Image (cartoon, rainbow, N blue to C red; front, side):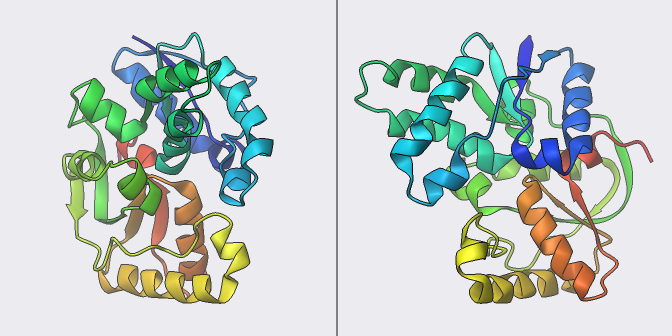
Length: 239
């Protein structure tokens, strides 16, 4: 099975280890992974800011980049949801509608791909520690991935999993929301950080690094020792 890695901006620029872990997990289960090096941002920040027509050039470029891919897998529910969203954006476009449909059908977030496509619920990893999980908004509400990451986490040997109170609440990041509504965003992430601390977990795990960095920043400023890690880092660890 051939898979193209959709690295995402956040993983590429700030958390390259997440991309590395994603590749190693996929290869562990027999996937042949390639990396189309002309890929760029999916266009989400500009699109969410209202610049639809300006963003379409980026979207068309990304459709060309992954045109020949069998599957496209990324370590971000938010960014994968954006690629899938091209289908609605280009609906009715005689040139790009079919391209957008094809990309949406073969694009998956990592845990979604492991569970729904490969049929894997236990990756055979070991990680010692008390863990809680933040279900990021775009991953759960837009992409619809809810059970897969939790199922994978709970099957990691050594993980002591604890539910995050009010886990469905937004962390306040929301991409440009955190910039445009910084005061509200600050209160939201404070609530999220308080709930994380309440669990007494050692690790906060999630499937979107932007959200995790936002929460991790607040936890750090509060003097918390909770470590923030991406799901791929847990699934690719023997500890």
